[in-house]
Amino acid sequence: MDLRFVLDPDLTPELREQIVALWVDVTNAGGAVGFVAPVTADEVRPLATSTLDAVADGPDRLLAGYEGERLVAVLVIADNRFHLKTHWRVLKRVMVHPDTQGRGYGAALMREAERIARRLGLAALHVTVRDGLGLDRFYKRLGYREIGRLPAALRLSPTDARDEILMWLDLPTPT
Image (cartoon, rainbow, N blue to C red; front, top):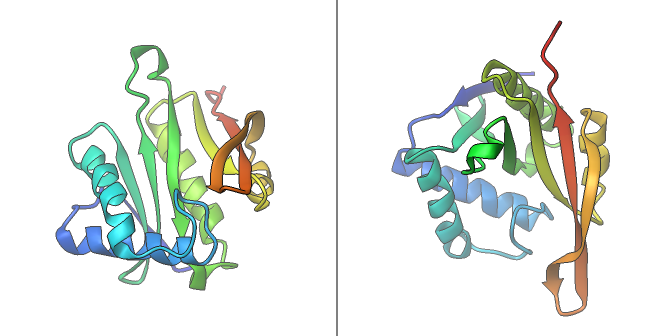
């Protein structure tokens, strides 16, 4: 696997546009990253901008995965912005380019996020998942467990409401 990770890359205008393009491609291929297909870059850009500004200004972190020089994977390690929750983080906008699916990049991205979290001394990671896509099975294979559901919390259309599945990974301190 030729995947290289960069934590907190320089958020140049070019990288920001690459992330928007990745976000559009992932969404339009059926990915559950905050939108319902079809979307355009103009629709994604405002949320991408606010997400990346929270990285640039802190306290969130961006993990980028590259195949050669091509951006193919990203996720945000989001701070909870609450002093009683400083011991864990939320992983948001977990994306792997659709044309690289099946190469193990998603699992590698999540393992790298776990490695970083352990290095930061975190006790746990949390991710939310849109029900109905089988994504919970992917996270369970990586050691995450379902800790709850918000019933019909995601309204994809007037006739399609999905549960939001809450997943949790404990990161015990090695003994």
